[in-house]
Length: 115
Image (cartoon, rainbow, N blue to C red):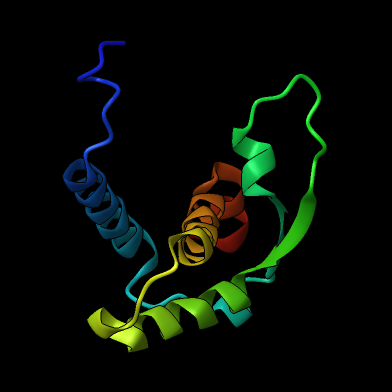
C-alpha cells in the first residue's frame, strides 16, 4: 500500500459514516428502541491491547453496554461544539453503537427480528 493510500482522510471517514448511517436508517428506521432489542451488553477489548501488537497480549476484555453508549452519545450531542471532546473516551461509545448496528444487520439477526 502506498503512503497516499495509507492516509486516513477524515473527510472520507465522515462520508463513509454518513453513507453507512443512511443505509442503517433505511434498514431500521430513524429510531431504534434499544430496550426492545434484547441485547445490551457486549464484549469489549482494551484499546491498547487491540493496537499494540505484542507477541502475546494481555487481553483486557471487559463488558460494554449499549444503553451506556447511548447515554454518552446524548451527552456528546448536548455538549455541542462548546464541549471539549475526549476522543479516547467518546469514540469507543459511538463505536459501540455502530457495532450494534452491524450486529443487527447480521443475516441471522435480521431473520430472527423480522427485519
